[in-house]
Length: 598
Image: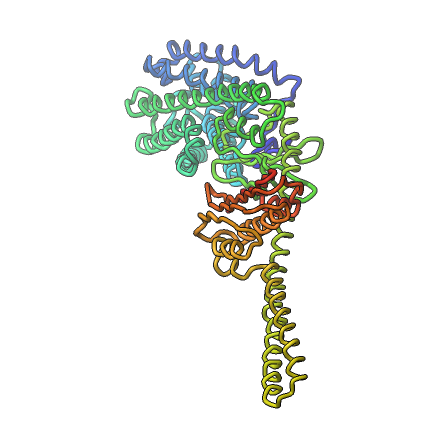
């Protein structure tokens, strides 16, 4: 299954080989613990004057808690298979966090101190990546990924410059390691100072960008996504602000002294922020496990034939995303529909929301729009859920086809009604007018025959006039039966009153319909009453009672009579009412319809 954006593709960060990834992760915990214990012992002994952890018991505790917190959070994230490479990088960040303490190991091996100096500058790039990659495990968008690479590249170049050209003994700003650099090729103090200054202000600028990005994400996300981002974004903003404060403090006091209250306070704020950030990463990993278990319980909670939309609702509740929606892809018609078969627009990604395309056997099944806090939704779905999605897609396809058939029937009914109105207008404006003109001409000829005392012509003209009048009456009755003009002009109530007056049997009319309703609904109700009265007369009824009312969005009409039991199924009316999504009730002496008027 595919995920976009920020899905299952690895954008430049290599995954561990499956053969040694798990042993490496298992070994990370004791290695991290050993490095943390070693750092604590150094801080309380040989590094008491050259490390922050050695100057304060609080700083020592925060140092150990921050590094181990990152290691544990990274291991949790990796075990949940949710954070991609970010979990492994969090472990690495936790180990690198202790590097400044090992740099301050005054009696330690030069290689250890030199390596610590080399890798200490990578704490910020690693945390920079972790924050921007949360919650997907990879930075979303090309610009963000490029920014991450630029920060990492700058850190690597700065470390290389210090390693090759900085002689700690000649550095006036040296404070933790002023003797050892086993990687030194040539001492160039001016270049080393320039590298240090550039790295400091570049890091401050990157920290400002990180703070701005976190603030924008919190403001742009909706409530649920904001709640999930807050435990990581807020500590990251504090950490970024502390980085900027450290750069400003170094600009005013180039010699960094762990005993200085300002520098010590900045370090403690950084450590607290890292601890909170690690707690946020760990909480997200635990939430991922809870989501997976909730999804696993969906199958047991769904019935054998769940109602359309049940799977979407169940996933929404299980994953804690009330705005989650599923659009099913119908390849035959090249469009998306919801679980009830209603056409929907193709889901698109938005701030705080991702779109995951679910594919099975190279065939697209559905697209899920969900919160960005579930970046790899595909991994949360087991085989049973995928089967449920495929089954609901098939159900949605059937419902879509059924809806298309109903829409087609409705269009046929509307086309027939339009043709009825056209024929009624043609008869009224064409043949009826010509018969009236002919009647007028016959009357003129009849008057002339009377004036000339032509009895034979008078009798012929009188018979012709009677035939024309009869034809005119039949034509009017025919036109009225095709489509009564009063229905279009005045509505259902007056049309039913006119129909009752001209019916072959007495009709009692209880009409509570005062307002106008959709033309197709009024036409269906009128034709139903007309056919019911005609059918009642054919069954020997002495009267018919008609009731018409509008209730709860439905036009409800009933016709009752006292005739013999009905044998006709009233197919024509059933087809018309069914095409409009209505219900026809056929009983021996009662006929009723409910027509939606939405």
